[in-house]
Image (cartoon, one colour):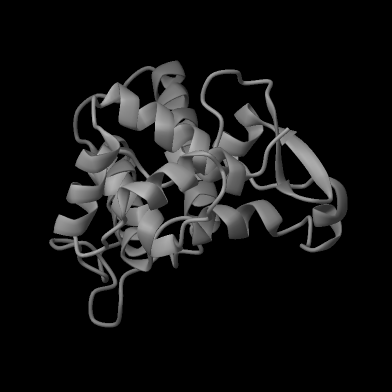
Length: 209
């Protein structure tokens, strides 16, 4: 069982070989990025005899055209165990789900570090930059207003009313989608309205009945 530190060397060697890069070729590429690594240093890193800095890992990932997490985690067997921290091992599959912001970690001592009521929402919220949260909130608001316009069209239509069963089905669909949107907005800690002076999507009248 290995740690991310130890896996970096193994994954670096495998990726370098897949990319048909020699040690000298990788060293030259790192030098062009402004983070020179001697061929001997790369060899030591691949053999687990030297740790890489965060800056070096980012540069190596750029050269190899992978995200940095690709260097730190197992990729062959989803059941392979890895020590993310000394207190408990996890499977490669679980580690990747965490790294890709699909699930928070709750094993062992970590279970006591975060409030179980807010832990998952907090994890999702902090897994995206703030501008993405804002974009999600605005998109959700526009979708909600679109759904409300659909309902309004049914209610104020001068045409013969649709069959009651059809209206009920449409209303249920609207309610379900609004609930899903509310959950998504809550997970992103997004306020369900626009900034001051922009409370409604363009074209909506706040005084409309």
